[in-house]
Image (cartoon, rainbow, N blue to C red; front, side):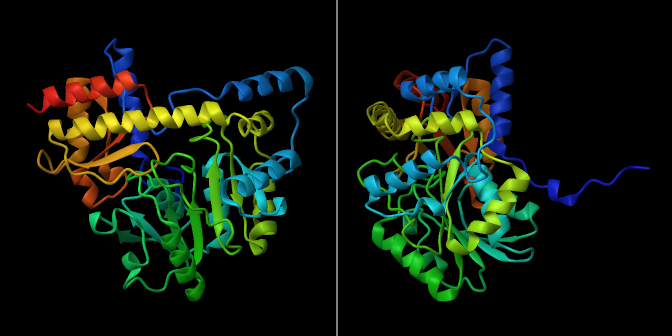
Length: 380
């Protein structure tokens, strides 16, 4: 007799990870790959982080910390909000987590009951939807498109009722949309007036082109989530944080105690040093800006001339409907025939995403130039 398999594990895959596997298989077969599929910096952690990690390995036992992380790091994150945004956030409201993924899981568990309804923009980060599905929370799709600059705004919420929660990302994945301060405040007010719990995903803060992103951390009822993975270039260290509303602090703490015990201690010690590496990190962002310029200039020559504004993060979300209505098949062919790995839009929007493709550009300038060259030759 077959043993029971819980339904909560029967959720859609994170398709970009499948694309990564296909790209790895191609590389293992001795063929070249240009990685435009994965949203992670191609650079490692900054040198100050590496030095701090080496020193900690030599000098510390690296045991557990408190569930919310060590106090020096929490205090430094609080200082970061004051320095970058002019916002005062008490360290007591800050929880260090196992990446932003751990923060989403803890936040969703603490804020939402099974059967609740949480609004999510489409296109948007697929793991919101998948985590909520695993927790038996209904995700309510809110379509966004070029009419709002691919941003989740109050206008996009017209007609959406009976929400218990709303997730907003700025800068967003996959479109790179950045909310203005006015737009962010309007969303916060909309949620507060209706008793809707807002979750603000800010993991791409620090990576914008022209206009700085606005934080929601000064609104005490909002769950604000950030990460060391993107701007701080520490993806594999699995370190993130949350700014918690006071009413969720203890619920999240006991969940974290039982699920994770604590975030990785070595990553916490190293992460503390990341805030002193601004010059190196800003140089990474300057490279992303050059890569962005290359793609935005060259993609139209390959027939990809309709894309989201890409004002932040390191993605171009482009319309491929002149070539296909099946972005998954299109990306498979693209990888097989050119070696350029991209992510189909259905990862981010199960309906309209079949007409879109995401290109990630945190790699080298030479890779962007070569990718554009291959795309142009492929579509001739």
